[in-house]
Length: 528
Ligand SMILES: *[C@@H]1O[C@H](CO)[C@@H](O)[C@H](O)[C@H]1NC(C)=O
Ligand SMILES: *[C@@H]1O[C@H](CO)[C@@H](O)[C@H](O)[C@H]1NC(C)=O
Ligand SMILES: *[C@@H]1O[C@H](CO)[C@@H](O)[C@H](O)[C@H]1NC(C)=O
Ligand SMILES: *[C@@H]1O[C@H](CO)[C@@H](O)[C@H](O)[C@H]1NC(C)=O
Image 1 (cartoon, protein in one colour):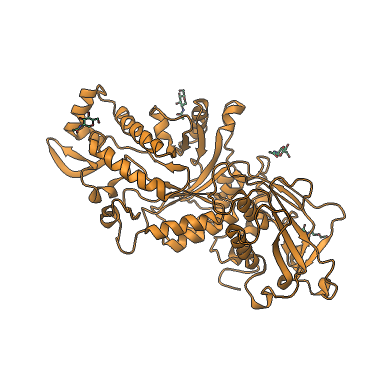
Image 2: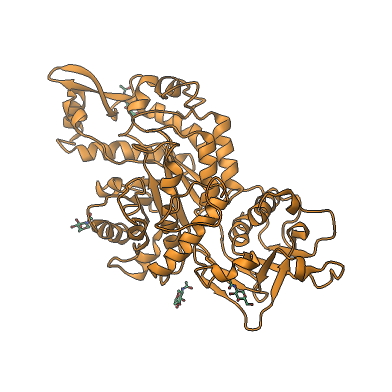
C-alpha cells in the first residue's frame, strides 16, 4: 500500500505545463500544493516534450508490483485524464508510446489497506535512492518519426523531488449525522483529499440528530434513527464502496461511533440503551447519554462494536467520548443509588470513566486500537498506552497546553482545535489555519514526537451537500500543507500564490472550490 500511496503523491508532482502558460505562473516552483520537502531543477536540466496521445505510465523493471496491481492500474487510469483532460484528441493511441513515466515500487502489496505505519515517501527523478519509489520521465529520444518538439502539447522540466510527509496522520472529518451526505459527495471529497495528500477520512457517521449507518446486527438503529430509513442511510455496500474508493487513493477510513454522549439517535432503535431523565420522581420522557449502570448496555456495546470492527478494516476506531452531559444522569434516582453504592459519590466524571473503561476493554479485546476526544484524557480515564488523544477544545491557545499535557503523559496526540473548517468568517480565514504550528508547545523532543498529526473538521450543523465542497476547498488545503510540508514552509504570500493556482487546478478537475480572493482562473468552473 505504501507503494500506491506514494504513487498518488508523486504523479501530481509532475511539472506538466502547457508551454504557453509557463510565463504566467505566479510561483516559480510550479505551484505545487502541498509544497514538497525538496524540489530542484538540476543545472542544465532539459525539458521533455510530451504529446498526450503518446504518453504512458509504465511499471519499471524490477518493481515489486506490476501490471495487474489494482491500486497501481487505478492510479494510472485516474491520472492520465487529470494530466491531459478528457478530450478525445488526447486519447491514448495504440502507437508506440514516446514518453513514459516509469514507476518503480519497492513495497509489495496491492490488496492491503493503508495504515498509520505506511510509508509515504517518494523520490521523483532521483536515481540515487530507490528505497521506496522512483518515478522517472523517459524523454522521447528514439521516436524520430514523431516531430516531438514541434507538436508537443506540454513540457516537463527535468525536476528532482524528494518527498515525504511531516506527520503520518493527516485527516479530514465529515459529519454525516447532522446532515446526510450522499455517497457521491463522500467519494468526490475523497478525490480532493487525495489531491491534498490527506490520508485519513474520519467518518463521524452518527450523532444525536440521526443514525444513518445501517447495522446488520441492529437494523432497527437506522430504521428508527435515520432521517429517512430508505434514502438517508449508508448501506453495507455504500460503506464498502467508501472504504475501497479510499483504499485505492491511499486513504484510511476511521469510523467514529461516539458514546456515551451524542447518542440520542440510537435510542429509538435500541430500547433500554439510553438513560431516562427525570423531573422530580418521574421520568420526563427525555433521554440522556447511554445508561452506564445496566449490564444490557455492555452486551449491546459488545455486539455492536464486534460488527463495526469487522466492517471497518483500519486498526483504529474513533470512540468519541466528548461532551457528556451529566444533568440527565444526575436526575435519575437509579443512577444516584448506583453511585452511592459503588462509592462514586457525586463525581459524574468517574461514572463516565466507569463506562469508558469498560468500552475500551471491549474494543481492545476485539483487536482494535482507539482514538478518543480529549475529555477522556482530561477525566483521568485509565487508557491503554497506545491510545491516541484527539485535541479539539479551542479556548484561545489552550489547545497547545493540552497538547503538552497529553504528550507529557506519554500519549500520542492529534490536533483539530484550530482547524474547524465549518467555522467561517469574512476574509481570508485559511491564513489562520495555515499559521498554526502543531508543535509550538513547551515540551521535550520525545513529547513532540508523539504528535502524529491532525485533522481538519467539517461539522455538519450548517453544512450539507450544497455547500460542503466550497467550504472545504481550498481552505482544507491550508491544513493539508501544514501537516505535510516542512515546518519552515510558512511564507503566507508564497502559499497564497500556490494555493490560488492549486484552486484553479481543482476547478479544472470539476471541483467547486471557492476563491481565496480577487482573481481569475484560465478555466473557470462550469467552463469558460
Ligand atoms: C522550466 O524551464 C524553463 C527553462 O528551461 C523555465 O523558463 C521555466 O520557468 C521552468 N518552469 C518551471 C515551472 O519551473
Ligand atoms: C451484571 O453483571 C455483573 C458482572 O457480570 C453481575 O455481578 C451482576 O449480577 C449483573 N447484574 C444484573 C442485574 O444482572
Ligand atoms: C495541563 O496540566 C496542568 C497541570 O496539571 C493544568 O493546570 C492545566 O489546566 C492543563 N491544561 C489544560 C489545557 O488542560
Ligand atoms: C526542514 O527544512 C529545514 C531548513 O531547510 C532543514 O534544515 C530540515 O532538515 C528540514 N526537515 C526535514 C525533516 O527535512
